[in-house]
Image (cartoon, rainbow, N blue to C red; front, side, top):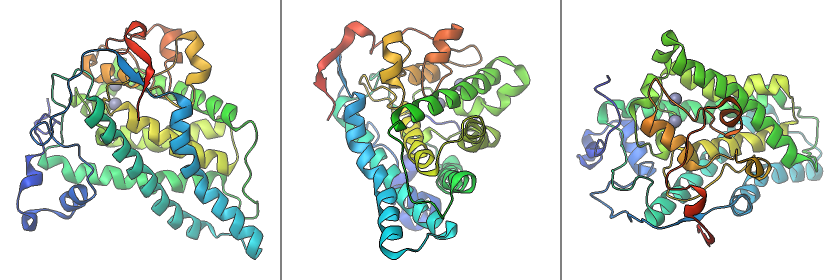
Length: 332
Ligand SMILES: [Zn+2]
Ligand SMILES: [Zn+2]
């Protein structure tokens, strides 16, 4: 067992004298990455039916923002006749993605402060001082690595930005393939004894928060951030702009999946297709994977429950089971 595992009230270090903080600690406090602890904020402990945040509502907040860099590049190319060098595009993308991700973090924090957490009697885990540097590096690696991968694999500076009318289907298929890769690698780390050591750290949190999504041993971090998307892209290459939108959405779903928000909050890219088969993923699915999952586990998918449903590893929901959903109450 790790001594440095995330735990409730693990983040007391954030109250210490600022002059004694490391650079990583200052950045994490200044950017308001952490949730407020139960001592700082009285999270609602709701018992009744859960509200919903359906896909169209999620798209309304995510899609217009995701389109800004694409429209901006299209306008720039049309108006000037110039192209955008990949290095310039990379730098701009890192800045924009940082903004996009932070907005999503803040949105989810507003939701948990309004609707509370799943298993709300138990305080969510936080990050101990000894692991802040690691958390900071993970965030930096994700922020710098994914856009680099997307641009390196798919960017052609001579092409005007283009999106297909089939974009929703393209992104859904891409996500289902990515989740197939993720499902089997994730399941293997649980079931093959010598692979467990690469995944154990991620499971030291039983009640995660959004910022713990990448809290993992380095091989897992690398494979989750880059390995899965690269293998998926090689199997199903899509255009740069679609791939870029997918990378933003993919990250948003990972953040949402670790948020613990007490709502029926489905994965935005595949749930319309999969809900009729009862195979859509919601926040509670991965939350239960953390809460009850150790070596012997279930709910291995992170973007859908399709593969868990097909291969018999899906578990029953507790608070977001069908009869406990209030379809008329919308998360906002
Ligand atoms: Zn796991
Ligand atoms: Zn997780």
